[in-house]
Length: 184
Image 1 (tube, rainbow, N blue to C red):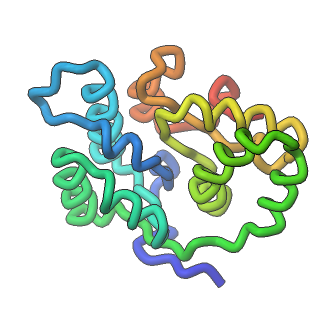
Image 2: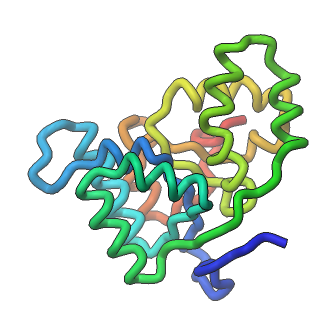
C-alpha cells in the first residue's frame, strides 16, 4: 500500500499531481531574475501554484529539493504547503521496471543518466504521469528506452525552458496529456 498524504481524491479534473525535478527548483529565480532559464523555472512553479496543481514528493525527491532549492523555490514550496498542494507519497518499489530499463540498454553512460532520474519516473507512474524537468539528456534517454519499455511511453515530460513545449499554456490549460509531450 502506498502512503499518500495530501493526495485527496476530491481534486477537480483540471488539477494534476505533478512531479517536478529538483533542477527546476535549483534554477528558479526570483521576480528580479534576468536569465531566461531562471524566469522560465520560476514561471512554471508559479503556474503550478496558481492553477492549483499538486507537487508530488517522496522522501528521496524531498531530500533532493532540500539540498538544491533556490531561495525562490523554498518560498514557493512554503506557499504550496500552506495551500495544501503538496502530495507526499512513499518511494514506490519499481525494481522490476528498473530491471527492464537496465536490460534495455547496453550503454553504461545512458544507464547512469536513466538511473539518476528514475525516482521521478517511478513516482510519476503512480501519479498523473507528469514530470517537469530541464534535463534534456534524461528526457532523450527515456524517449529511447520508451521504445522497449511501454509503461514509460505514457509519461508527459515537460521542459519549462523549451518553448516548443509551451509549458505555461499547457499548465494553465490543465496539464493535459499532449502527444507532443509524451515520452513515447
